[in-house]
Structures are given as structure tokens and as C-alpha cells.
Image (cartoon, rainbow, N blue to C red; front, side):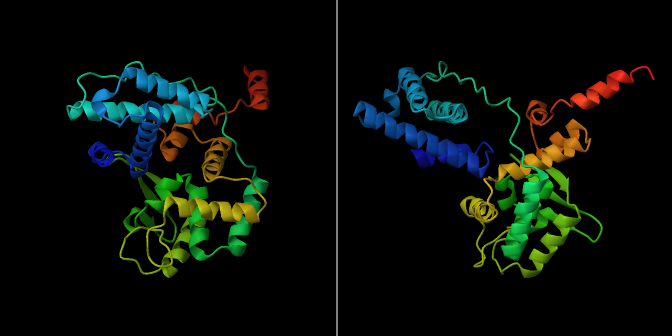
Length: 286
């Protein structure tokens, strides 16, 4: 049934990572159901009480609100799948409400320039050409790690004075992000040494296989540890966004570069500038 659910999701233009997450969430729910009820998992026996109780179970286990909410979305999709297949005769997910996430409006943790310098220096000192290019691309474009590993050779355009990368989203939507001189330099060096591969993915292993999300994550963790930093890949994205805002780039341009669907997500980086406010008010009528 999980395979059928996965195939169902593939018809709805979800990303590969989203499909994996939704499928895993449903698998965990099915395990919980069997362990809790002692019965075989049969879709026709599911009730809305089962879904609500599973939500309570996740909260009792102190899962983050974002994790609980993703599980809720996954279960709703699963219910719609069962309805579509005629395995349920009514929507039992209507009472399954998301929980309030009080952390969503907090400003993201952003590394300072000193830490970024320390991290980059470590990568350049100990990293191979691919790792240097990978880190520089994340840092200088703000793309998500999942977007970087899914880039293909034809998505990157590099010339001597300019360049851009095409980042694909859901369906056939995409955004274009310019490549600065650092990104162009290190990508060009990597492309000259890129191992032979039967795939056209940009980042590959030494044997020519596509770089996986897990391997990409380990690259970041490896050099962060060497640099003595506590750092996860998304912090590079946070640094990119915060730096652009601090330099005065319009918030809507930052939203477009980051690929945020909601401006509220981008606004989390926009911190009040008390000093600038005082100067503007003081000189209001001048």
C-alpha cells in the first residue's frame, strides 16, 4: 500500500524529498496503529479517532510542532489517497488540525562573518574541488541543500563575467539566481575535474553517482567539525538572506532569490534597525 501511495504522490508534482517524507510519516503511523491496537492495518477500519489519537501521541513524545504538522499533512494526503481508491467512504481527517508553532516567527539563527570566514577557510584548506564548489554554491546562492544535489549540468550557465543557475521547484516552476565571481570560479574548477558520470547531475561522487542528501549533509558537517563550529546546511542559506537584507536589497527580491512562496517567511530576516529608525525620524522634515 505504501508503494501505491508513493505512486499517487508522484502524480501530484511533489518533490522527491516531499514524497519520501510523506511516505515515511504514513509508514510510522501504520506501525503505531498495529502496535497500539494489536490489529492488522486495514484502511477500511480507520477512524478519525485513530488520527487524532496519533497526533496526541506525537505531542506526548515531545516532537517539534513542525514535525507534528508535517505528519498531519501526510496523513491528510493518505486519507485523500484512500478516498480516491475507494478504500474509505468519508473524509476522516477533518478533525485533524495542525498545532500552533510558536517558533516559526522567531528570527533564524545566522552565523556572523567571522564564523563564515572560519568555515570557508577550513573547506578551502582541507576540501577537495567538489566540496569547495558545493559549499561556495550554497553560500553564494542561498539555495537549499536538496536543490543543490538535484541541479543538472544544463541548469548552470557560466561565462567569464556573469553566470546564473536555474533552480527547479514543484512541477515545472523554477527561479534563476545569479552566480557571483566566487561561485563561478569554484564551479568552473570543479567542472574541469568532475568525474565521468552517466548521469547529468552537477554534483556526483568519485564513482560518478549522484550525490545524495545524506552525503551532502555529511560534507557540511565534516568541515564544520574541523572548524570547531556547530553548523547545519540551512545556516548558509540564512547567512545569504541576512547579508542581502543588511546590504539593502528589496525584501521582495530576496524572497524571489530564496524561492519563498510567502513573504512572511522572508520577513523573518528583517530585523528592526533602531539606529536607522532614529536617524530617519530625526531628519524627517529636512
